[in-house]
Amino acid sequence: MLNFLSCRENGTLDPVALVRAETTRRTFSLELSKEQDVKRIHASGVNSLDLDPVEARYLLSGGADGVIAIYDTHNLSGTPSSTAEAVCTVGRSHRHVHKYSVETVRWYPHDTGLFTSSSMDKTLKVWDTNVLLPAEVFQFEGTVYSHAMSPVAKKHCLIAVATMTSIVTLCDLKSGSSTHILKGHRAAVKCARWSPRNPYLLATGSQDNKVLLWDVRSAKSSLMSLDQHNGELATSTAAVNTAHNGHVNGLCFTPEGLHLLSFGTDHRLRLWDTATGRNTLVNYGKISNESKKSVQFTVSRGSSPDVVFVPDDSSIAMFDVFGGTSLHRLVGHYNYVQCCVFNPNTQELYSGGSDSNILVWVPDLGRGEDYEEAKKQKAEPSQRTQNVQAYQDTWSSDED
Image 1 (cartoon, rainbow, N blue to C red):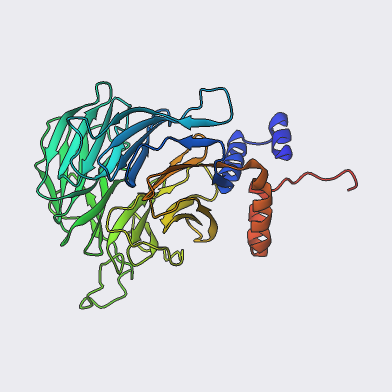
Image 2 (image 1 turned 120 degrees about the vertical axis):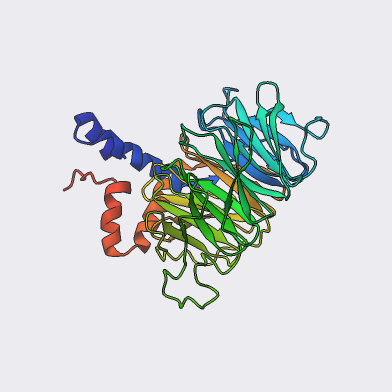
């Protein structure tokens, strides 16, 4: 790090390289915070978390008790120890509270004036944050497992809704209608995610073991069905054009939108090229996934390599996205982890589980160098050479 600072002072190093190195060091050294905490609000499990995309400050949570809470994660106390308090809640006494479990909560992508929530009570609600009242309520025939809004769309305000039926519904915030539907799955749709690169590209995962990619401008059919075997199986085989050998209940795009990660109840995580639809065949090993709900996992931003954080039973597994290497395991929950969200500004991670707790994972700067050194010792010689430039100080001693 001293070498990086010296090179920056001399003007011989691109500032982006310094930021990337420090971001990587912080991301790789996450541990359970001893000084930061989130006040416990939910009486049952925490199903979904979302950090506002504007300031990365306000944390939105939805629980199995139907309660929604908004926390201020900034420490304004002036002391190292702090507890994030709930700024406001939609509690059981609120007249517009969801009747059953809240499955997904999402901030409006462009400001904190709106947020959305979907529930087992077959509704999707669009909330006005200022008055904490629903501005719009969409009703569906089946249980709503998940919903998503495009983070980059400027010409549409569509919400993709995954329900117990095999149909994906697109709700339009501008018109208040939900008439646009996508047909292609043959079983309940568990998860949906928009591309952070293409405002019209949508990915959906289903109990039919498939992941479909859609261009929402064309409702006739999906763009492609992702095939775990890359077309090498005979067309008569039942497993053809299936992404997993189990239900698909988790999806996440990489930050640049060029790849898609899918998670299935076959205990496998797979990485796909979104341009070609090919399985990259990266092997992450077995990752426990017994959930009957949508599983929310996340990918870091700004680190090299990118890191995916995946709930694995009562812990969170960290993997190199493109290498598949297991990097670390975050242990702290007492029950199944349901969701996690990454803060790209501070390299902190928030996780929620069936134990009703929201935990904060922060960089341990003292452990970062030791961890990277141990990681390099296990690496192949060629890999060590590549890692030196990103993580290792390369200054010479006075004796040289």
